[in-house]
Image 1 (cartoon, rainbow, N blue to C red):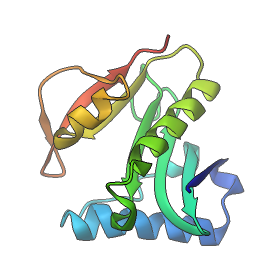
Image 2: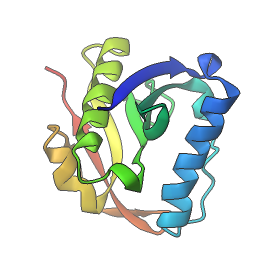
Image 3: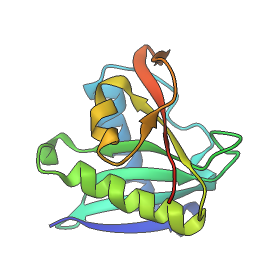
Image 4: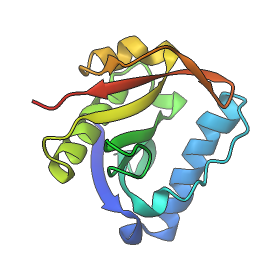
Length: 150
């Protein structure tokens, strides 16, 4: 069973921050072989969603307000699960929880993401719709997607 918590940056402990950065580096830098600037200044303005199984951080996302990543939209970013839990629907649980956090903090606003293009169908299951053509971000194909809130 996975459990989620959300915290603003100031509420994170140094150990939590370390584990977040380690998980993001494990997947986005090492596993995907993509050196990029992960620490981008946006964490300071984000709500952090942490997913734990038996006190181990295995899933993470950040929720960003309007104007942080996109001028007109709040957004979700750095959505990641540890390889150890993939294929068990925990990624869907992470996205569902993150959407709820975003809706609570930014009610009625559409949510925008920059999804890795191969995950478009995954995000379609959460009612995100592609907004244009695929583009390269850090040499990985991505696609902009929007979730209209009901």
